[in-house]
Image (tube, rainbow, N blue to C red; front, side, top):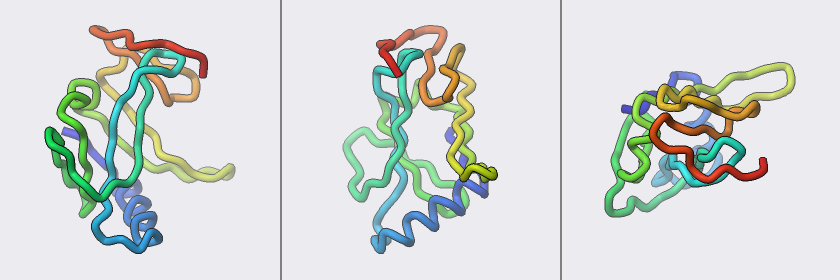
Length: 117
């Protein structure tokens, strides 16, 4: 299961509304790379693919490819505002190490493909 906080859901809904496409949903994924081995990918999509797994939280549709579920099961996505702006944060209980910027990680079972940040 993937959890979106109310703050994250609200921000995603605002972003989707600004795109003027009511078919958009959030796609979350993982790809090799980043200084810790794996990097998160997050963006909007309007077409589901074979093997996608659907989640919904606070009225936001979230899609993850079935191959990435092992990295993302239990993830909590939040949106935080600060004096310097705002951004999404990902708290991943599967990660045993992550980089300082929080955009890459590795798991106990898989180290990924570390690269320069």
